[in-house]
Length: 247
Length: 203
Image (tube, rainbow over all chains, first blue to last red):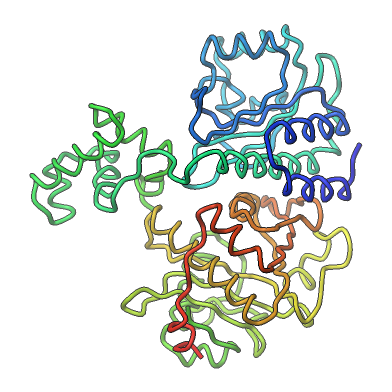
């Protein structure tokens, strides 16, 4: 059991941390103090030599291997549920966020077999950045202390921010491809299902110009399909769902 | 950046009036906050008094893009008056501590413009603090916004545990501003220089 004092101490130390090994050991310490056994601080993408993405994990090795082998980064039900909320949630309450399929249930059962008990995931979503999360897990059979959860939520957010800061240091400030203003506008309209001609009418520019903008945007992402272009641009925050669905 | 002190003076100026209108569009129409609306157009509450300071970012045509309200913590302010229970100890007060409230981005902005304008406003707030010997900002934020505030890379810490009020998860926070803050915002890619000329014009 920890109190706000420990959270504030954690924030103060996390702010000064210089490398991910130090952060991992700080995390291990606070994880233990909060009564958890494991933690994972990750951006939800499968990029191992990852360009400025966060990946600091202390989970049972058996589970980490399976997770990577099966590329569960995006399909893992806990990750998926975390995309539906900004507030931390207990894994045992995951069904209040998403409907579990048979495949989801088997993933959760496997995690349990690998030694993971109940856990608590703090989403880390900010505009212009890939989704991420900070999760803490109990050993199987351990009981989650509900009173602790607001503190865990704070720790999770500050931990993720520390990891974010470290990953920035190792990487030039430019993240993924960046679209020009006009390209982003066109891609947002592509995501709305508009044709090049329709986009040209909406923006009041020539159809040839639209075709060129969309082509340039596809080139920047190295994708050939319009659908994939829209998804990639949404994924890394070049356009937002608000741009697609209107506000 | 444009600065005005006192709600009455702000209302005499077109740019600041449009700020109160935008606040209605954002906080009442969009976020459904239960706050008063004046003349059906302006969101103005009891903290919009003579000591409130308004900081506005405008576009080249002088239209409101973003704004924030700064309240002295020596008098009535949101954390001290409405949400003291969000602080584990007494809410911080002092002449060098201001509370940031009504951080507002124009609704018409698209996702990428929003980030850019948000960064300009955050930089302006830091610049304002440094020029006016303000050492800390406090504030109450909904959880998603708190995560953004945290990601700016400045020295930010919680003043209490997150609490839920009518379905919203709120947290009280303090941001310390000092000689390192500019660098911290530079490292996270937030910093945008705020022109001196704009400063003079706003006086």
